[in-house]
Image (cartoon, rainbow, N blue to C red):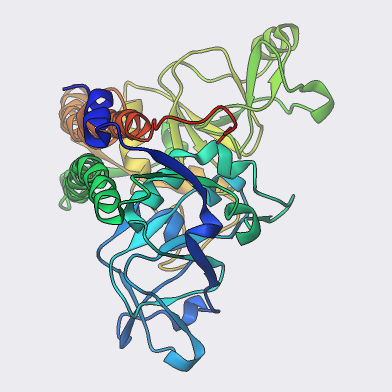
Length: 415
């Protein structure tokens, strides 16, 4: 079924009027709700503005947090309110909206409350999300970004059958119903992925836990040397170039700096450089993040990104990779460190199964790796497994959302 023709059938030739949001709703602000006041023992449900980025989608039908904050110190939701975050350190987080299906929920500071009249809030939240680019143009600020009611109020909203409120709401509700099918499926898949990840972590921990006598614990320093790339000066980098240069902030992500091929070839020849399959480790920031080096030409920030030059006749690189995920890195329970020094790395103890039989040891390591690879593909791979399925469903939702909001526009409207 063509959803575009379905929209035309739904409208049945009815008029569509584009109305400024400030003509359809009133705007309120949430009140301060410090994180320390959020508690599982609270007597009333609440929403902190940060949860609008991290937890909620277009429709909020179940609130996850509670507080004991007094009602007279708070702003309470009404069913059908649309909530938007109004400040963030990145602008992209502000172009989102959620329609709450429950009254009496305490709404925290930095939440814009759009109280609708004659508009289905679920329809409005989906429409706002579909107009992300338009919303981003309204964001102001440089260090902290803000979205203001006076600006969002100018957003034009398509209202089908404006002269027949009952039919208008029925059309809006039907559009929401179609889109809700996609979001519900994505939510189911996401919940299943969360369960699979817990299952994966459990089996990983079990597979890498050994009884006394089954293994010999070896220090990483016995297995190989700690290596790092040669220091790259800021003056030697550029925002464009041939060879990606990964700093600690872009490690495992997209690069934002590059070095010349000439410098790369020189340093690769003269100094330490990882071999394909060796495991790169973050030594600052989030300690112990790992990336398996795939051999693609790239360079890595010295001291912040290191690796063990490993002899795979004793320990497989992929076995190390999985063990790093549960390694303590010399951190006490509940403690943190700002940097992983080479000495910390050398002292990390690794369980080597069947140490008196290298061949049998490698077979056992490979067996463990193979099992964990299967779980990893199911829970983390973007080309297969649940993450891939979730990505496809999200794209499908966005495609149909775009079609279902493709209302005819007068030539004077640029929304």
